Amino acid sequence: SSSSSSSSSSLSSAAEPSMGPIEHRGSAVLVSPPGNNGWRESLLKRTLPNYVIMFDPDMAFVRQVEVFKANNPQHPLKVYFLMYEQSVEQQKYLSSLKREKEAFEKLIQQKAHLVVPLDVDRANSMLQAEPADGFVSPSAVSTRKGAGHDRKGPTPTVIVDIREFRSALPSYLHQGGIQIVPVTLEVGDYVLSPEAAVERKSVSDLFQSFQSGRLYNQIESMCRHYKSPILLVEFDESKSFSLQPVSALTGDISPANIISKLVLLSIHFPQLRLLWSRSPHDTVQLMMILKHNHAEPDASTAATIGLEDVGEDGETVQGNNLQSQDVLRRLPGINSYNYRTVMSKVTNLRELCELSQSKLADLIGNKNAKTLYEFLHAKPPM
Image (cartoon, rainbow, N blue to C red; front, top):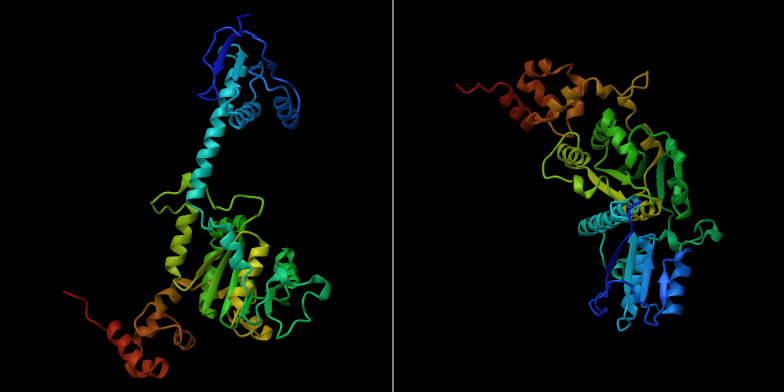
């Protein structure tokens, strides 16, 4: 077999110059020992070696030697690697160096795009600040007192779609002192107030909903029935707090990119609000803040919202004439307050175009009728 080669590297500029072949010179010599990292660290402190010979290059042990040298800058120390040139061991060590470098670069990139404050003390102080009247943090509620139901003031209520009980969020809401009302909802997953509804998506469900087109219909229904529709994306605590790697972010809009899809969704529904949650615990905090100073929702009203859009077979009716609805709502004189009246009295867009101005006034008022009639009967430019 080929002969083993010796390579040396100095861990500090204060280390003594290279001496070629290793000479003992009365100093302790430590050959790369087996064992766990804790045992190796204690061995370095006990023996205080001047030379470290590594037969098997170990990245973790190399970093421990670097820390030892940094803590003892006046102590002379040299490290020698004994390995075959162009061997598997050498390639393995170089690969570990490359992985470490890429990990640090990725960490630096992600830290540069963080959406949370880096001042942790300030963030904690904001969360621990004295809450407003009627607001009780879930962490401040004692579970030994019936989830905080003995507190003063009315108990906040959240209407929850019964299908959401497959997740852990309803139990966290109850633990946080919120009254849970299970109802079969046609629009939204959580109703926080008469004007606010939340559609909750996990990251995997978000991708699937975009792919199937189901999310568009869900958001369209929320925007039709609620003044403040909210799309909540809830991440997994054990995974990265990002929809895609930072390296995949581009300045161009691509239909296949999840960020581009969210941008297009927010453009199409300008009243939609996007919220991000790191965990179910953070979701509880967000819902408590969103409910503050808002009226409590009514379960019977929330259960009936959207039923007129569901046919006997359970399919949403607006899916069949969604394009016609979009065209109608974009016509001059048609707004969110009168388009339902027009849809109930007019069969199709052609019939709408054939109505006289007086009949349009009976549906949407004189001013809106004049605007719509002039638009429909305007002569095309020559």
